[in-house]
Image (cartoon, rainbow, N blue to C red; front, side):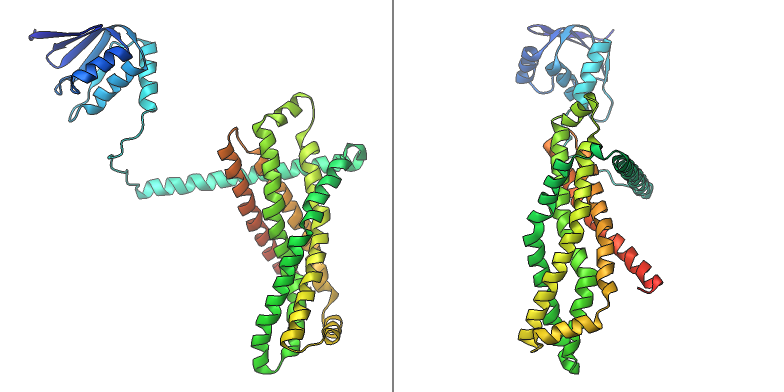
Length: 375
């Protein structure tokens, strides 16, 4: 056997036998502090194993000391032997919760790693889509049950959300549409004046506002305003475990929280779209009068004679579908909120982004459909 040196540090004995070190005693925070204050390299650099079978007690500081000695060993693996199951679990827990080394080189991803990451994102997106469709089906089934049993509809909640999503949104929607009409008239006049066709600005404004921009921009504003509010409200209840309490009491959160919000949005978005159309036409008429000299009477005459009623009908047909998308996504993201504020903020942002994206996708699909049917 090689020479054995024994160094006692109060209540910890360190026995070095060649490339093996045996620890005995109590490896607790006070002992670790004394060991580290003497010198940093308590364990020689050429040691390959540490036997802690003789330790009678070890705490998290002692576990950190052992993990730190492992991390300090360079060029060879330093193993820890003789640990009981409890000691081994404590050491592993400390190792997993250590902060990553700042000077560690970042691991470069290979092509296969990038493909794996892309595939994982695709699978996650597919699962989220399936879950969202399932949530939509649950809402539709609940609405069907309310049609059969109207008493299940919470009328007070419906009226409250109609006020919040509809009446309170009128100022911002009307102002937005008015300014869009002004911009269309101003920009259209600059282009049409080159060809002496200033009067056709009426057709440009009417078709753009009634068919596309009026309801589309209204839906985008509602998605940012009401959709995020749905997510925040339901998410806050999820954080406070109020939804779990509802289920414990035998109450259906979809019936109580989701259906009134979705129905309110489906009722009020067409009304908001109509207000946006009126405000947009008014703004366009005013700018046409100021910039091109198109009087309100001429504007009204060309609007009535040259604008098909289906342009207005197309916008109104889109409104309930946009409202359903915004309401379902807003409530679904609220149901996904976890138990912390970070999750609430993340799901609220996801709700707004996904709602706007899906509204634009649906608008594109409607445009293709109406072009095929010739409307």
